Amino acid sequence: MKKMVLVAATLAMTAGSALAADMPVKAVRAPPPPPFEPWDFAFGSALMNDYIFRGVTQSNHKPSVAAYFEPRYNLNKDLQLYIGVAGESISFPNRAAAEIDVYGGFRPTIGMFAFDFGVWGYLYPGGQCFNSAAFPGSGIPGSEIGCILNGNLPNAFLATGVPGNVAKKSASFYEGYAKVNITLNDQWQVGVNEYYSPNFLNLGAWGDYASITAKWTAPSTTFGTSGVGMYISGEFGRQWLGTSDSFMA
Image 1 (cartoon, helix red, strand yellow):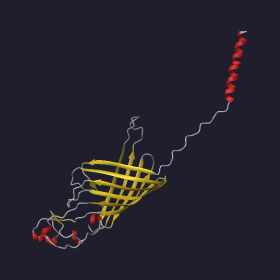
Image 2: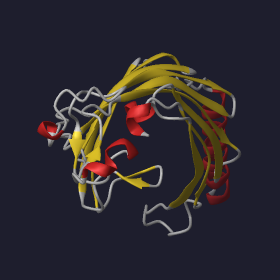
Image 3: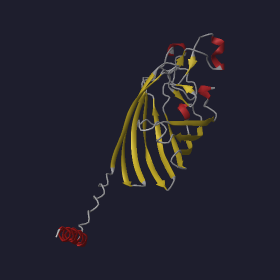
Image 4: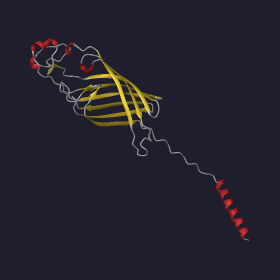
């Protein structure tokens, strides 16, 4: 009798398992993809011990602060429009108050190639003229009249013995640029940049800057599960300049 009860219980359990296997399973729907967000924003600030621009100090080897704000609009996942504004503290011979950058462009992406095309304006408000009384109405070609600053004078005025360095009141200028960044894999990126200005720093000379960049990103497991990441990047570039106008000779 005990054997029959055990067999019956075993059969009941087997039948229950078979019925459960035959029951239809309701498929779990995948969550819908997040809605496409066309707008994006980037912003940040920095404290630098020296503001270096293409190898030349802009802050007279003194600390500088900077901040930027960049709204972006994504037409689709492969094409972005953007504008931006930035500011840096500087120390220029003409005592300009600051550097204000205004820029804009578009960024198309094609596979591993991320391009960037745009125009960048460098504005230096607050430039001043000093010692203007030394050469009233001098009319130096290509200059604002009387912009004489401390330092060395052009050859035409060396004989006067008046100390001074000639600098224009305004150093503002703009550049057009084209860049491409190539993602080789999860760790390596390389890039090429080209900038051109028809009147670099308002000197009357064209300016051309070209550079190559590289970036290595450490694997996510480098620091275990700490969540800490690391990357190393570098840039090598060169600036070419044309002939300045006669005021800067």
